[in-house]
Length: 545
Image (cartoon, rainbow, N blue to C red; front, side, top):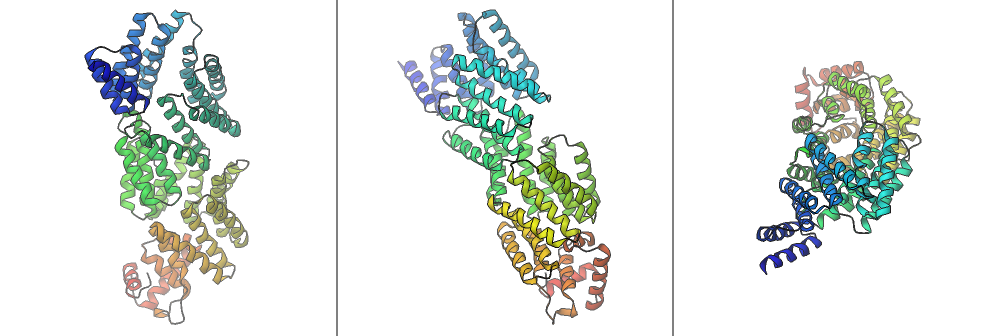
């Protein structure tokens, strides 16, 4: 009676998605009397969902053997298929390939028209997709979905639609691909799809949406994934990736402290070898937050951790070098990664950083080339985020080229988009540039309004470097300024007090380095000092920094 009771409790817990309870109860039942293969499948799934992959693998192999012993070859093949795919995802290629080969052999031996034939198309489709042959991948996924429909298998139907969508996006057919993603979601929400396929679909679609800059969809799917994970408190797989994606979305929307906390929690949960790329992504998110807060040593350490986890920390590392005053190193890094970049999803971020670094280095020609390529990339894509990145870079370049009026119009378009997508940090950076354009056009009141608005956002976020730069621009000098400094000399002094180099100051104020050097010489003469350290001390003593 006790074994039956444990079995029933285990089945009930599984139905309620209480995975730890299901694992404990089904394990107790199995110890008393070996489970039937159907219940072994449930026990193995529960083990996988609480992170006991070693136990899950053993149980899957047992279920496979039981089905073979019964002569149910196709059901044995499906166990072999899922075991092979899990091993592949963990980087155990030889074992994974062996189980997939066994699954194919069992299906061939059965001679049946079965849904397992559709499942076995998936590995070949994924291989074609990874090798840059999306048309072939699409055909295989389409055939898999047809087989799934014939056999009314919801798991394979949803996975087939996911794969077709990924292949279409790889072919540049974005709208069609997104439509298939939405169809896969309908299949998931209608019920009847198993937990592992559900998690795969959520995470894959979010990743694809991030790649094509569909931030609205990515946020919507991340929210859905969060609710799904929260409904299963002891779920281990997918929760770490969910937290990484949540950290990304929070960062974009200005919830920086929450983003940092989510990235740290994600790293604690991502412990499997196959999760290392996500660990790197979490470290990179933390590094970006530290850099934008001016915590440069913490950012340096986090970028290093991201690299050790297999995630190349760019463009953030190049921008860190710029913040450290190592402009030549920043240029070298961004040029190298642009030359090597094969991912179209990463290129816009690299081009945006290239334009920013080019302007800081007074290389307006290089910045213009990056901005133009970025504009070409954004053209014709229905991606507001990408359009805003492009307008931001182009507006900054126009300002450096001396066309403040055109710069202001372009920057205003970028700010409107940033405001619409709730990206406060990017919007504040654009408004700081708008303020500089207003000042060049002689509208000092407009400039001060823009500077003040951006300063408030930077204060709220804790973006110390940006705050220091905009405060140096914000306050005009009075007639009774200490030492008789002019407005521009006060701006230069405030930036010197932040530790910035002449080249960085020149980029911030859209001046030449020679002009900045002349201003610093005048400051030294008027204040009777002879070093940048003394200038910094003077700025703090007189409440100018």
